[in-house]
Amino acid sequence: MRLAAFTVTVAMVCALFFVVQRRAGQQAQAASAATEHSALFRNVIDLTSPGSSPVSSPVAGSQKTLQLSTRLVAPAQFVRGAWGVDDIPPQRLLGTLVVLDVRAQAAGHAAVQISADEIDHWERIHGEIPPDGIVIALTGRTVPDREGNFPVFSNDAIEFLATGRNVLALGTDAPAVTRTSAASEALARRGIYQLSGVAGLDMAPESGAVLVVAPGRTGGASQGDARLLALLR
Image (cartoon, one colour):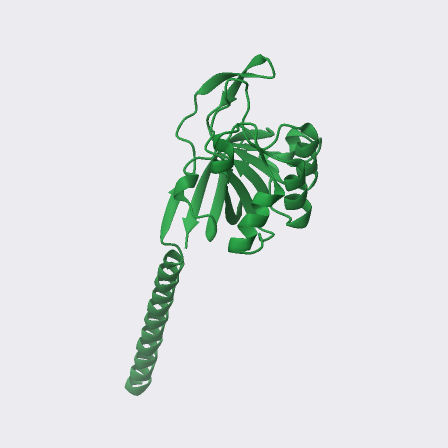
């Protein structure tokens, strides 16, 4: 009886030891994975505009209120039945950040259109824009001029990025990505949402970063404020 009891006790101790060791190993692996994950990125840049106050500027001969906050416009704004802000799949809110620096072109011409030439120039330096790209224009013109002008993407650039590169989203630090409803509808029909009022792009690299787009729940609205975080590798 004593031998049997001793054997059972030793077996229980050994089993407990192996359980403790296994849990310790799992915790160590989890900690190691977390460390490796955080080590993938060396910094995080907040690309969200700190301002949310509207400004008044003459647009098309009338006064129009333009928000300074960082905004997400969903496809439902232009196409009935398309995704609203809350419907955009989370996988499409995470992508490769592409910054098109067109400040030189916009400096002397507020109504400049970002053309396919700027995209070609970017790709010659950094390589082809990936299909998970979120392309954002750095124009340096965050508000319209006295005539209501600000840089926008040209129709050719929009067509190329939408159909030739299958990007997830187009954005800008200016008040809007495009002026035409036809271009916005073309983007919406491909599930491409728009970002405006993006800030801090001068601190972000032109390529190599990952962008996290985090819109708030809107209860079915077609647009709303969003926070943008660039993860730098």
